[in-house]
Length: 105
Image (cartoon, rainbow, N blue to C red; front, side, top):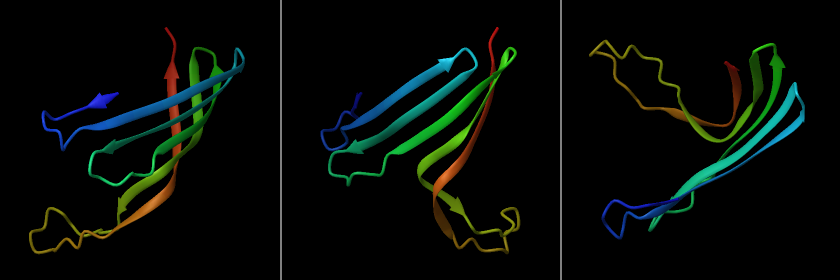
């Protein structure tokens, strides 16, 4: 969809493309790509997910991976201690594990 902040310099585009492949009543593959772009900003890497889901009675268990840029803090100082400084060190993970559990009524 199109997004705007009532300013021509902040308008942009949010996109999402997904698909589901149902092999049979118990097995499902889910794939999705999503991202955004704002005018005057460089294009960011989109985020994607690939998930295999299995039916277990009324519950479903999905296991897969998310792909993109996931910044993770590597600063393990005590945030509640005012004497400990925060260096703000982060590392970007390209793949992140995905586990999902849901049920049908």
